[in-house]
Length: 221
Image (cartoon, rainbow, N blue to C red; front, side, top):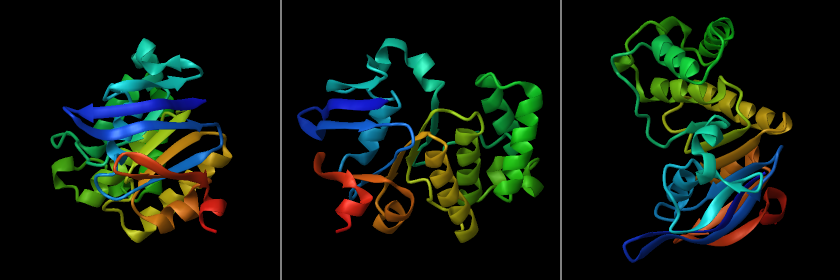
């Protein structure tokens, strides 16, 4: 189980997140909703270990992730809000690098890259430099990089940004399949309609505070 325990993050005297607590269990797809400035991205960065909280802790199976951040990150599949990639690499080279760093066997890695590039309609561009990729193509590369090592926890920060309709539909179906497979998914978005379709539960933030937390079915009533 992944838990946020009274998370608070301040920048100087300004609170970005205040006393945030929730639990994410296997099979749960938790949507995090809120307008710009509500604390969503700060929350994501604390969950991934990119930011340390001012107070509180992120815990996995009862232990702070800061105790062994490297081991925790091996369990993560993370898609950030902005697609920062290496433009001089091809799509295949980037995915090969990511898979190698995560210790994937070469035979499994090549098969997984090949199948996922085909799924997201990038196979024909696999040997093109990513400097020639559109925003949507770069976003699809990030999605593949996050899922190809089959992690236990997925953290998606506005993952549909720049995706075409077909890729967005594939991804939504994939998120639901991850939940059904017992994975833990934290899905950060500002689009209510998407969260209603793919998430089991929802957390709504405003100005760094939780204003609602329940199942999608109950929040929609």
